[in-house]
Image (cartoon, rainbow, N blue to C red; front, side):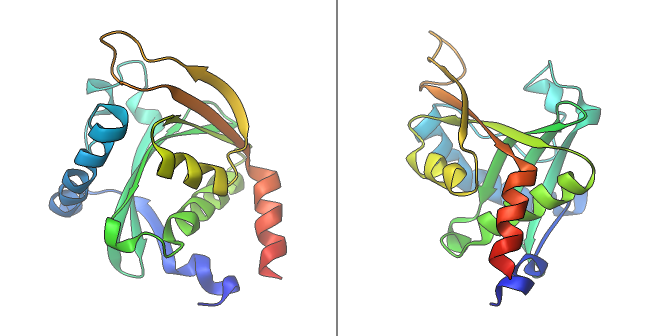
Length: 180
């Protein structure tokens, strides 16, 4: 795979009802891992987000299907938190498609789409016990620590959570240099 064509093999599109069964299969694969590292289920695909996170307006959230060529390999939830910031609520790539660089390409594609719309930053929350997730997010440019949150007694998660941010312009420039 050549670097300059690599993003073309990943496509992000709004998840649709026709994909529901396959997306639910991906969700079921993700459940044991997220329960182990976070003590809770991941966000399911194609739901009314307000049933789980009532404070987030559903018209500002998107469940996106991640395609590698023409194969559905994962999904992610994005919240347009402000006119300049997106918040990644969830990302999961099927296990058989990991360690191929496809997750990184999906995030590069997401970054470019939102940068083109005028968004400047991206943020997310990752569990401190999710070593693989933390390592991944750092590798795709989430290098600014916003805060660390201790687990709440009887709260939704059983681990420390870390909020990270990245500057979409800076990271996009680095990617453009790598393509040359």
